[in-house]
Length: 249
Image (cartoon, rainbow, N blue to C red; front, side, top):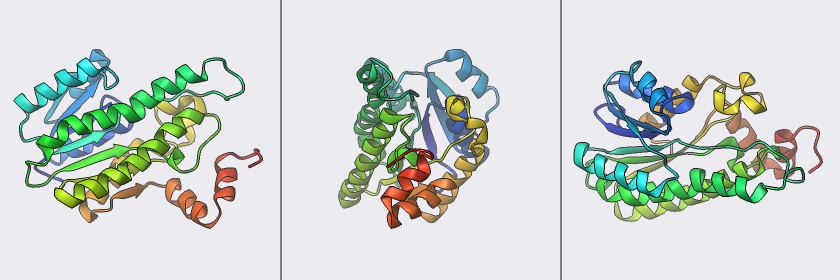
């Protein structure tokens, strides 16, 4: 997959991993579009980036997504890469709250269902391009959950399964490539509640994505994710304990 000369949509692009992905691709001369819910944060991000347009849009709002798709088709008809990065997480224990359903509902809508919707609406445009790609950002928790983010992990597990099916399906009839980016703990505001200051830099995740494009590596296990996945293949029980130290499997 080429890393220059693309038109790239990045949801959740105003901060953290999304911002660093936007930065690294804009530095390479790509045309970048970032979205997010907070207009002030988007404007602040765009001021620091080259070749970048900001569009206020909430991936969990169907009307917002429809407006976004209409704008992209009209103003960016050469869009050829969609990076589904926007996400939300709720940190809690399943036996310690009375609103697990509501928390899960929000996470599954944002982290999973909205991505299916965006991909469905933009795939007809992507497949018309000479080269195109979809990147779904999941997590180290996609295959080994952490019990303090239980329904977030479940939403990412669903996204992982969907991404594999989407890759196989599109490969049969189109040239659209489907990547899955699986970061470990990353030092962002998003992960503050679970010790994000101990995580890797978001730039490292962005660089891993660029390398994956260059090598057509479709499942991108960044940093500790690769180590934990290796352990998971050997012993799912040991991987679960490693992800949840101090807990019994």
